[in-house]
Every structure is written in C-alpha cells, then in structure tokens.
Amino acid sequence: MKKTSKRSLFAAGLVAVALPVAAEDTSVTLQAVAGSIGGVPMMIIEGENLDEKYGFEGTFEYLSSDGLFQNFLIGNSDVSMDNDMLGVAIAREEGFEVSAIYPVGNLYLGIVVPGTSDAQTPEDLRGKRVGHFGADSGTTSFIRLIVQEMYGFDVLEEYDMSQVGPAALVQLLAQGEVDAIFNFESFISEAMVATDGRYLLQAYADYSKFTGGFAPWITNIVMHDDWMQDNPATAYAVRDAYDEAIALLEESNYEILRKPYIVEKLGITSEAVLDQIIENGNTYGYFGNDWSEDKRDAAQAFLEKLAKEGSVIQNVPEGIMVTLEDAIGPRP
Image (cartoon, rainbow, N blue to C red; front, side):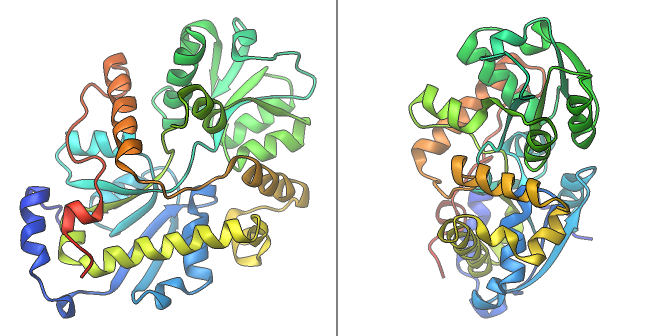
C-alpha cells in the first residue's frame, strides 16, 4: 500500500520533470464506480485496448461507490476516473495530495418527475415529497446550489425530503411515494422508463444556459500528485486515452454503449432503459474535455459558493484542479 506524499505539488513537479521516461512504471491501476455512467470512458479504454495503444498497461477496477474514494486515497489505485471535485477539495483539506487533472462527466443529473406530474419548474415542488440520497452527496449539493442560484430558494428547506439510496429512488418515484427525485444516470433513465418521466431540471443544460456556458463537472480524472510527478509520460497517456474514448462515444452518437462489454458493466438489462440512456447522452452530452482556464476558474468559484454556504465544505484549498502541463511540466 502506497503512502500518500505530503510534498508540495509544484516543487515536486520540478524534480519529476528531470526523471528519465525509461524509469517510469507503465502499469496503471484505474478505478471507477461499478454500474456508473461515469465509468463508461474507462470501460471504453479497457474494451478497445486504448491503454495498449497509448503505451500503458491498465488494471481496471469497478468498485462500489461506498468507500470508492477512500480506496483511491489510501493508494490502492493510481487514477480515479469517477470522483468529483467536491471530494477532492475535502481530501486536500484533510492533507491528501490528490488533484483533478481533467473533466469527465458533465452534470448528467437533475430532478426527475413522472409523466403525470404537472410541475413545470423546481418552484412547483415546494412543499412536495422529493427523494434524494444524501444532503452531503455531490448530486444533492450541486442541485441545491443550482436551484438556489436560478430560483432563489433552498430545496432542503422548501421540499419534504426523503432519503434512500440512488437505486431505491427509482422505485419510490414509480410507486408514487415521492413527487420527484434527485438522481444521476443511469438511474435517471431507469426512472424515466418506469414512470414515463422527464427532467424537471437537467443540471448541465439548464445551469449552462443560466450562466452563459459554464456548468461544473460531476466527475473528474483524479491522480495522486506524487504518482503523476513520478510517471509524467504515463499520466499524459491516460489523458490521451480518455480523449479518444469520448471521441468514440461522440462519433458513434453514443451507440457504442450497445457493445456487450459496456452493457454488462453498466448492468443494463432493459433495452428501453438502454435506449433512454443513449437518447439522453445525445441530447445533453455526458462527457467533455474542456479544461480551459476559464472553466477551471468558474469551477473554483462554484466551489467557493459551496464553501460559503458551509454545509459540505468550509474551505477551498489550493491544488484542487490542475493541468498536467502546470503540475508536471511539458509532455515528455
């Protein structure tokens, strides 16, 4: 088990640039949430042998969301493909030197209502029963702040909130136990199929429109600072493989999701749900790779708003979001 380094990110980067590429270990352990849309790019890297194409040997682990980030933080994997910047902020505040180095998932989450609902905006749910899976989760935290900015009220105060797990929320909505749910893909698509439902708030599309082009990411590629400094060529190779994976998604209009290795890993047993996942992917775009300074600055400001609210984080430490170019120097 590796011990996470406490070295300064940038000081260590200066040393790492001088290391010979030949000294690198090109074996990489990558992790993602089992059954999660956020893990699809990693599934494609594995299934299409993009690790071999880009010169590294990947070990791909699909783990339960419970304890996933802790598994990464203690050094059981080198790269996490399915964790959010909120978790990175908390980890850095606790002394773990890990950084988000690239985007993965756009906000493939939101508020879903059944087809019978007459609600037209989140305001129409005031006083209604709404299911979620934790006030401190990234999904609920992001929806809460987005609704607060767009509509001016706090969902935790104005909704009658019921908490169960993400999968159980689909059944609550289908059984009429709640009027709406906060959730993420693929549970969004399952809920839509089960209830002839629709998005009341699609977080990525609606918040991007509200801000004029920015929405935070629900997942990022996260690396240990010392690992990427010690393995710069491999770190770049992982990023390159991700870029090709999402290009394959877009070029296929998300039809690549029908490949058996993806269907099996997502655990999709319903053709109707798979069709809905593909439709939602084409409509909203599940993934991106815009890691521009403007987007990172906007994401930093979004985290600072969460910290000001104070229920999940109180501080925004440095080093949450970095580029490989800044952290480890030019591509070897």
